[in-house]
Image 1 (tube, rainbow, N blue to C red):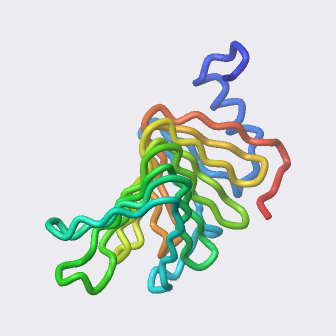
Image 2 (tube, one colour):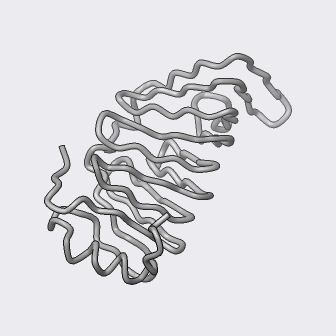
Length: 170
């Protein structure tokens, strides 16, 4: 991915060239600004898919095939999304997306193998070969935790990044 550069050397060079607004990279993880991913988690959640199956016994519904979830300006797409309802079925507790998951809005996008979105807390946990792009900048790792309420996040698990020198986020 980095054309022969050792990852640590690349990160050090990239960090030196990066603008101050870029995410900071640490050995344990990277603190990331998700101001563009800030979301009103009380907005309605709309789901579109090729198929829906409902399990009354455990209170879940599974959408499959070209699943698209929308909430405000946020979009999540995946091969399958399991919806877990709150006790009593009055609302959605969490969404568990698998199979080529993409979470995006107008300025930021993240891809992973799976994601769990807990509606009440506004937390999205993406795992498995996570790639985040923010404008011309990219950062990857194994686990990304985003707080949609505050617009902040942390990337963990052998974090690697590419910054475009002098680039600014829109």
